Image (cartoon, rainbow, N blue to C red; front, side):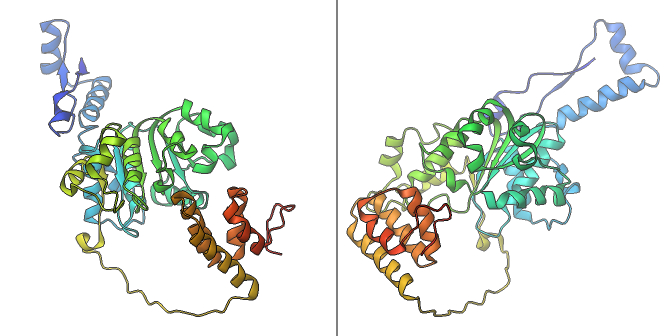
Length: 373
């Protein structure tokens, strides 16, 4: 009888793929001789032999099976190398931080297919911003012939059963869904735009941290936006303890005078190499079409100018760092449109420094739409 033995547990520590060993077991010598020297084997024996062969190569990932499955995808060497590294070295838990336009989604899709085709990912959860949910559903169907399930189609029952589920992070973290999502065992979880879960203690971070999943991919081109501790929180989701404690991480790597510029760069790069892949256009030699930029000057009307002025004064008056970031966000939104400011004001509440902005925006708080009047 062909059986799968326990893998070499030391292989993982050596950075080698964990390949299960096959053993031939027989109840007596006569059975062993019959298996090796007997006549043409039966279909059942052939089926067992083929199954044993699949088991032997399931986690070696020497050959990427997804290449034959993908449709309409231009394959780049750096993407294939990334997938190999995620599967063989990072053990399916990785922060994919390629620069914008290099195809993090395709890399994640290839990893998904590799695990799925080997029977290692029967239950997959993809979390994305609401606007990207239809895109993910379309990409899975068009490029991999995978029919994904969504909350819009199946409601609360979507979390149960095998297959691929695509949901918005905002939906999954809702009180009515979060417990059900975290209660289910997932083989693979993919979080797109993962910088949205970088704040420890937020409902998004807690949701991902509480998921039960063997494999986890975090996709973001901007793992660091305001300070290095954001990177710490993302890596902690993938590999708790990689950076020791928050205090130890700050002492070793964070420069208080420059929160985004790390100390001990080589040591940080080495630790990140165990969980993170970042491809750049320069390193990949990828030539993108030229961009042509033009500036169009538009004069704001009186209401827009008053709103922008109020937001600018708020930024100047606030000293608390957290409040200052929020005021800065309102200033950016004021430069876009008054409507963009209203949604943030609704979530903000009645901060003293925001009163002038609220008055300038003249939000109608009796209407759900919250429009400038």
